[in-house]
Length: 191
Image (cartoon, rainbow, N blue to C red; front, side, top):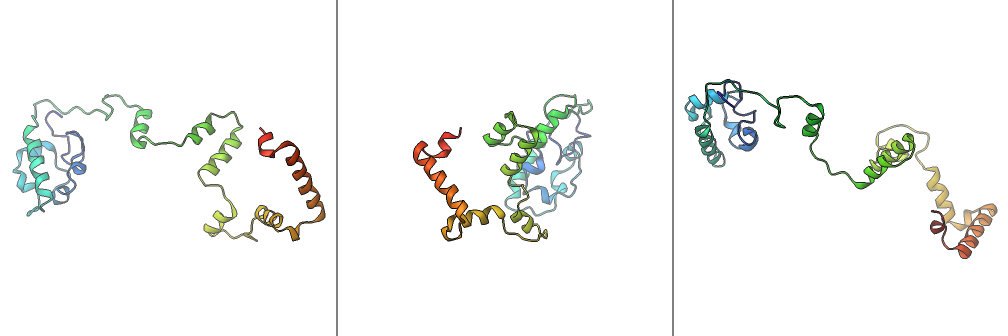
């Protein structure tokens, strides 16, 4: 900031942070939300606020008063720059600033670095984000289906109930049990 004629008192970063965020209790008392720093420094500071101030706002008022007195306006015009300290625009730096730093689970990094086909990556990404359209999520979104019962879970339920297992399923089950007794659990051998 140089002369402060184009720098807004409440919305621009002319101190270490945005004043309306730095002084949240004082900001609602401001008469003008669009006053410049130059206008505020020439006015009597009490005329800029609806009085009386609250007990929480008064210490912030004193801090703002000290900041305005310590700001040394010059005769040069204000020079605008970007928050990353350069006068040149960069879309990648803008994106990083707007999105912030997000903590991403390691599974997402592993997924996108994997050598799977893109359609598989997207499918597993939907699963990780819990956005896969299952019958349960479609029901919550009020989508009408013929049946909301899941075919896979109904088959598993039948396997858990031995009276409903057919003779061919019993043969398959006994074959799997025989393989497991000879070679150990299938999950260990399938790498």
